[in-house]
Structures are given as C-alpha cells and as structure tokens.
Image (tube, rainbow, N blue to C red; front, side):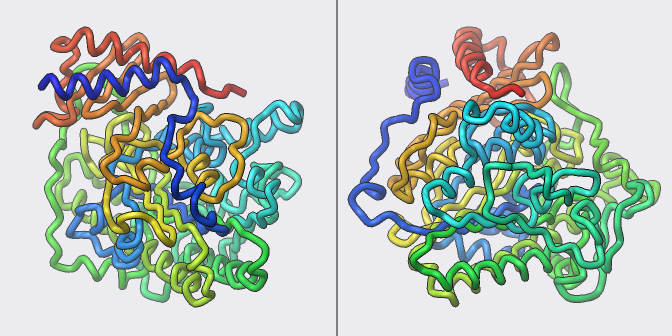
Length: 488
C-alpha cells in the first residue's frame, strides 16, 4: 500500500475517533449565500443495485434515471447502513444508526408512544414541524402506506406517528398493502412463497403491477401540492420493484432481448469467516426446481428479469419527474433518488441482500437541485444513508435537528472530488466499516476480515494478516460507531 494511501486513510479514521457523530465542517455556500430551495421530491426504489447506465452498467436500460443523473451529483460510493428494508429505511428516516430488525421503525414507534420528547424527530416530522406538508406514497418506510397491523393498513398503528401529514398506498385488486408488497400481475397475492413464481413478465401496461398505481397516486399528490406554491412540500414516493418476486410488464423484459450481460466476477462462496447467507428469501419462491447457483442458464434468466424490473421502476421515475417539470415546481425542488440497499445477483454465491459485502450495501444515490455545482458529475466520496437527513436540512436552510449520526454532504455536492467519510453498516451481530479503499468486517466470535477494494481480489481475499495495525485502528473506529446505535 502506498504511503499516501495510508495517510489519507488514517486521516479518515482520526475523524471518526475524535469527532464522534458531530457533523464535519462543511462549505455551506450553497445553503447560506443563496435562497434555499423549498421543496423536496424523494424517490425510494426497493432492492436497487447501483446497476444503471449512468453508473456504468451499459447493459441496463434506465433512460429516465440517467436523464436525472445529468443534472445530479451521482454518489458512486453510497452505502446503506443495513442490508435490509426495515433497518435501512430507519437510518434514512431518522439520520441515525439503529436496530437491525426489519421491525426497526415499528420498534421506534412503540418507544415514541411511551417516551414522548425523548426520541429525536424523524425526517418527515422535522420538516413538518418547520411548516412543510409531508406526504408519502408507496413504500417509504418498511410497510407500503406506512401503517402496521395484520395487513399493514391499520391507521391507528402508524410506523412514524410523528411523521407524515398523510401516507398513502393504493392497493386496487391486491386488496391490502400487504397484498401489494409481493404482488404479481393482475392482483396475484402471495399466500405461500413456494406457490408464487420467483419471476414473471406479463403482457399489459404498467398498472398491471402495483408500482403503476403508486406512480399514478404520486402524480396526483404532486399536482395537489404544487397548487399551493407558497406552502413547501416534502413528497416521498416509494417504488416496490425490483423487490422479489421479479415481476414486470413483458415490454421491459423485451428490452433485454439479445443484450449481453456481464459475467459474475465472484461466483463462489467465500472461504473462511464471512457474512455469507443461504439466499433463503430468494430460494423460498417457486423456482421450477432450478437453482441459480448451479444452473447458469437459470441464473441468466433471473438477472434479466431483475433488469426488467429496474427498467419498469425507471419508467415510473420518468413519469414522476415529467409531472414535476410540467407543474413548474422543478425550478424550486430538490430531487433525491435512493436505493434502499443492493442485492447479490450471484456474487459470492448469494442471491439476495442479507450480507455485508459490497453488492448488498452499495446502492444508487442521486441528488439534484437547481444551481448544483458541476451538474452531472459523479463523486467517489464514501457516504452513507444516514447522511441524507442532515443534507436535506442544510439544503433547505432549516435548523439542524437533534444531532443525527449522519453528516451533511454539502462538501460533496459542492465539490465532486471531496473524499467523503467512513460508512458504517450492520446486520444481525455483524458490523462493517468502509474507509477509503478498505472494508473491515467484524463477525463476533467468527472473527474479522479486512478487504482491499483497490486490489484485484477485492472481497475474495482477507488481507487482515498483512495489515495488523490498520485492523487495530479501524476496529477502534468501528467500535466507536457501534456504540452510537439506537436501541429499542
């Protein structure tokens, strides 16, 4: 490792150890010298890998997100704080590290009801307290529509009791938010996963799957919100695909006819201690007796259906952005597109997300607003999901709420050459930290692994034995992060 690399890395480590969770000093010219931008349009896409044409995946058809990218800062090294929907969205909506359970937001809701005033405000609650109309459509928190209960539709059990002005989930023939979450075409509801196909491409328009309805409702809400330009809004839209099962209208699968997909660079299960898991979420669906780990042709079909779902989600993003432009509010709106985590498509012998390898933790993050410096430039800055809340607070000129764990990304928005900061993630009893080109993963009694992501081997070789001092220092930084987590 070159000396300059070590100096840069140890500078990052020092900032974690000695600054704790404080927001790093930032150049706030954008927020302080110009009129803050008023509105926010936030689009969450479930299980979206950073596999988009604008992110370098030339085989993917994603024209609408790519068009957004031309006016955005693209974060090529954005990492979620947990590789699962619930805990990842907890960090998004609170700016904090929290429980690893998919019920993380629900646990916070129950604690909030008992300990009012003791728990920091959520992102929508903070914006609402500052005069914003806050609206959520689709899957923004863990449950589509934002309510808990048997079918996820009990308004007396909101996931964010301090949050949205209103939270909506159109269900149509899927009957309930729970039915729509894993719904396939024309109202097919998952009763037993083993009796539902793992992928599908049905003939028909976009509304034969739930995301078409979510998009229509989002546009309706956007049109209502923009009728009152004097009232700022925070509109969050959560698209379900490409979450399992991989179902999308056939026209999106047809886009990949004859398209060559890249080979899986790491097809084998890791040797030694790792966070490898058995892909049980994927394997429980009907796979017609096939296994993508051993059947290359089937693995190829899975990848193509996943890609079709990405293109389907991209089309919905395009409709929403077109509606924003038609309203005229695009001139005064921050647009954020965020994937709630990645998804292993066979890398390291896994099909799913519940692990701490790069493929599960890295997801797209795009931030666009009028006047962004060097629009369309990507950044290699290492950042994390918890940073989004403080960043939007700064961009809109609002006072910062009780100190979040994340840091404002104003520096990276102003300068794409900014290096970012450490990114922390956790799953079950495992914890990991990414600093510079290194990732350290601690697996409790199983040990730890250090990966050099600038090397050819990347996460297939544990180089901890070669860098004992680096491991020691990074472990100290990791433990400092671990102590910050909210626990309910």
